[in-house]
Image (cartoon, rainbow, N blue to C red; front, side, top):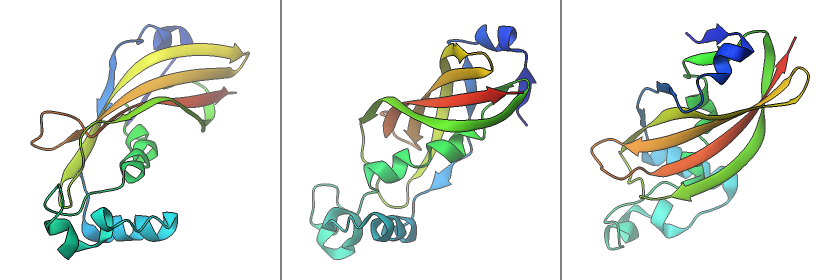
Amino acid sequence: MMEALPLDKFKQLIGENNGITDWITIDQDRINRFADVTQDHQWIHIDVEKAKQGPFGTTIAHGFLVLSLVPVFSYAGKYSIEGAQMVVNYGLNKVRFINPVTVGSRVRSSMVISAVEEKKPGQILVTNTHTIEIEGKEKPACVAEALGMFFLS
C-alpha cells in the first residue's frame, strides 16, 4: 500500500528507494503476444527452434516489452503525493537496455525517486529511476528514468 505524503515531505525522498516490486515471469506466451501487438516478429523473440542456434541459446523478450512493465512496476511504489487525483505518463528521460531477458526469466524493478519538480501549482513532475533486474543475473535488463505528472486536488 502506497503511503501518501505531503509534497514537502515527498521532496525529501529524492535519492531514496521507492520500493522493489514482485517478480514477473517472462514466458514465451507473453513474448508472442507482445510481438503480435507491436508487429515485431523478429526470430530472436518468437522462433524457438532458430533461437536455440542464436547468440542467446533461446528466445529473448523485446526490450520494449521489458520497458512496458514500468507502469505496473510503478503501482508498487512505496510513496505517493498527498492529494494526487491522478498520475499520467509524461515520458522517459533515459532508457538503456543492458542485458537481454531470456524466456522463462523473472524480472522486477527497484525504484528510486530521482527528481521532483513543481511545473505549475497542482502539477508535480516526478522522475523515478527503474532498475529492472533479472533474477540470478548481476547486470540489470534495463535502467529507465520514467516521468509521471501528478495532478493534485
